[in-house]
Image 1 (spheres, rainbow, N blue to C red):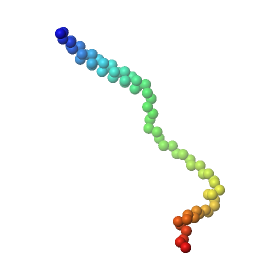
Image 2 (image 1 turned 90 degrees about the vertical axis):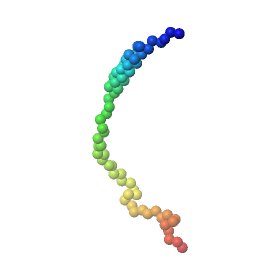
Image 3 (image 1 turned 45 degrees about the vertical axis):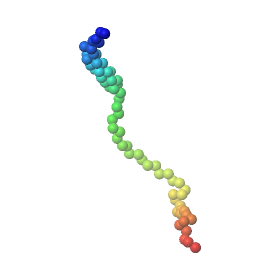
Length: 67
């Protein structure tokens, strides 16, 4: 039974690894990564609703005094 010639395996594996590394570096370098977002000050809008101007109180059944 003939022996399998493995003398070229090392150079083949190394060239595949280097080629994959270069291909992935080229693919990653095409992406644009955003910088860290900086917080912006948001002006809060005040909405006037009818219940903001009135005094309201909700009476819960459990908060009523016992009879």
